[in-house]
Image 1 (cartoon, one colour):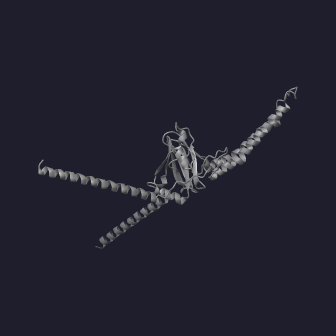
Image 2 (cartoon, one colour; image 1 turned 180 degrees about the vertical axis):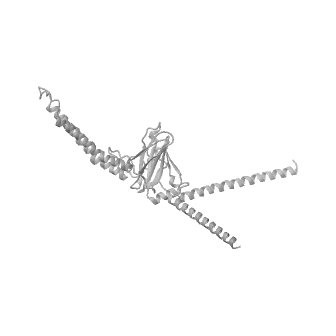
Image 3 (cartoon, one colour; image 1 turned 135 degrees about the horizontal axis):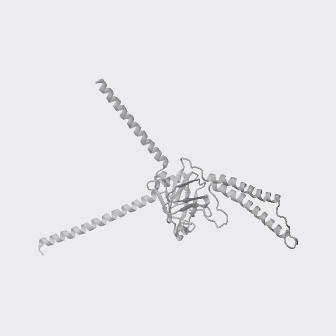
Length: 331
């Protein structure tokens, strides 16, 4: 090997070492930048999932309905507890008493000669009118309650679209930029570690504002599902190709759990629903943290500003045309 070849070989080795050092420093810089970005995102993100309250918005092991956190739910629960259950108890006890009286009064030992009576006009009128009156008494508040459940939401209601998939939920916010939150069930160990009920906790909740009308729409991408949250007195089918809609107003901030209530396939039992209601200001902050999230009012203001600017520009162009026409006329 002559001197020139040795020199070129040494130069190649030096250049390779220099390139290796440059690549190492470049990768280190990228890693540091990613770490800084992650740290910045952690610092700027103000949303922390709300801790659930034991017994609130979740099954409590009782035989009655869950406590209600909507006005319609409280009305329905009152009707059930104060009206329907006592009426069922009274009717059942009355029928049982009649049955025992007939057994005792008309048994064979007490009546060696069976009665041959076939009709009793008074009895027939009574046993016809009394059930009719009972049904009317139940129907009037029931129809009123049913009508309240389908009141039209106001124009400024927050729209949330719940989309059922096999087997998870997606929550879309059309009025706030159209972003979608995908919600899957948490493993049992993770749910219990978070202090949440097993089989009901999710990785991403449906976050909504409390004390605000919500236009909750349901649909599905594959088969029929049902969006149901017992403590909010809410249940609505999610049908492919259709958009169902109901209004809900959650009275208190909190976490409320539900499940898909329509048999939708093999993992039907693993489609939990977790609704997190936040104070309005915190919910708006959460919306702005989402990719593409905007506030509906901000969109309207921006649109109005754009329209105002366009009108001003058009007015300026008209003035310019008028001035040019005046100058031509003067010449």
